[in-house]
Length: 287
Image 1 (cartoon, rainbow, N blue to C red):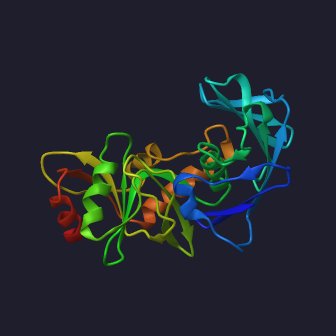
Image 2 (spheres, helix red, strand yellow):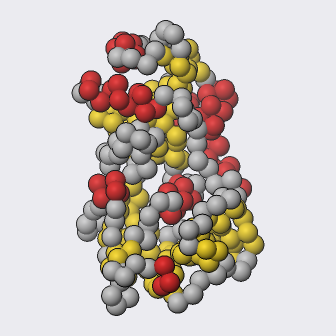
Image 3 (cartoon, rainbow, N blue to C red):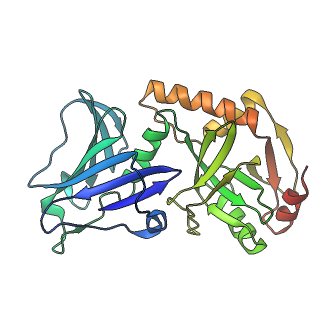
């Protein structure tokens, strides 16, 4: 058994299968906790053979996973080109994503029978769907908590400068919550930014969180500047950096509403920046 706490959502994974041992790998180990009441409980079982589930296909990633709806269940099927067409793992969840079962294909288990059932991308897919049920949103961005406690989100898609930002702020005595993905949640009217295990190439991943002070949309440029972004324009830029469940109309609508709320509560700016240490002092001095 193990328990993970990501963005104050606690997931407990249990297994009663003889000879099967659970493990947590990589940055997810930093998010392990004990004795917390679980929001999500998942059981791990082994299966002699797995095939794609019946039901309506909601989404196909094109390579690694597919999502189906079978009655009241959501079912993920995971495949690997190296392992052939049969799924190596099936994950079934109730409609609220609060209980589930992970089936491991016995044919693909290592001789040691040590398995990492929430290996990427399953843990992130689970979290995205949980967040869309009234809890929050995952954002493609670098999360920084400065030495004075102010917290900044540097949002951007690939190659926008998230990893560069993390590498510039880390030696400046700032805590990097993530260099690639953070989670935003609103509690008591305050937007909180949480680190996640799903880091970028610099491997910054912290279980800490902080009230969000400002959002900056990254733009590489020849000089540092900040332009205010408000309303629908700011929400649209944040949506472009978000991870909503496009297969889920209610979840998508919640995400859109949440992003509109977030940009009203947190000042947003476009940040054309020079990729050197001058941008750190520029942001710190920005009012």
